[in-house]
Picture 1 (cartoon, rainbow, N blue to C red):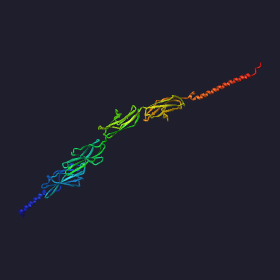
Picture 2: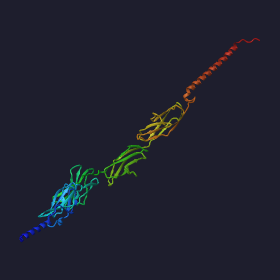
Picture 3: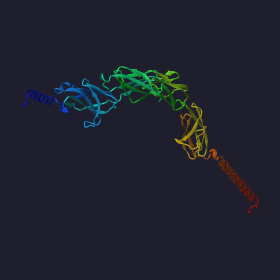
Picture 4: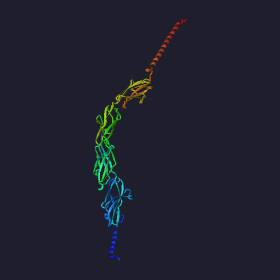
Length: 448
């Protein structure tokens, strides 16, 4: 039979056993408490989780929170990255990679003298941001305007520190241009640059606090400042003749398009000549100086080099012939007289509209082989390529007559022969007459 003291001890043990059964933690208890991200940068993720302190089973106390991370998905493998005391419900994870997916969960650990238990949160996925994106907005001769996009969301755990803009000139080392302390200022214009020079820029964003300051750098962007505006002109010919035209063409470098143009002749603006080409049609001879003034969209104007063009007077040509009527077999010389142009002429003679082969001098000997009416003219071309034609003249060619000058010797011979024949006939007649008379006088008288 138990003594009173033994019974009391036994009762106390039974009570303690029963109480221990109530307060002993269950291992790996599942719960709906959560972990989530409050902000991300290129290399950090700010985490926060709900408190489990009020969910610890009766008779237990919170020990800590253990945070796990995976880069392979919800199935792990998982790495323990941090153990937080019960009072800490936030964590900044540093030294991550930009534009990368990460998975997290947190385990709440609790216990008492009889054992330990835990609760696991729901798995949470978060991604780091890409590096800042820098771009060129505009360039001038001496400035480059930049803007950038910062994809970060900052938190008290990982606050914004600054932007640092750096510049490289013609491939040289980067130097600091400016430090910007306001996260809302995401544009900057770099001034005082050299025209026609290539620059490279990059933006560095800094964030964190204390000994945990991290940075991310954008990809560099290149920009070339605009060269000073310059203009030059060319012309299709440096010498022309009145009636011809010359084409002037402008070439522009530098400045800021679009451009406007104004052409000048001898210092005077040409009305309506406001394109990059100009067709010059002079009405009188002389020497002309031509240039163009080019203005870019900033209002900067630059004059081109001047060009001189010589304009010769119009070509005048006429022809003359000693006679306009000849006979077949005769020849005449037709002469051309030309003036104007540049004085260095080439000729081409035409008969009845057809060019005469080899007839390329200022004179033309015309010797027709058959009768008819012939129209003759000449064209004259100067060294500028300008051609002018004379008025035609008409030459009538007749068949030769008997008394024509070309038959005078035949006529003379014929007359001589006729005269000789007549003389012979007269002499013969006289001789016959005299013979008859002599015969008659020598007969004896007739006897009756």
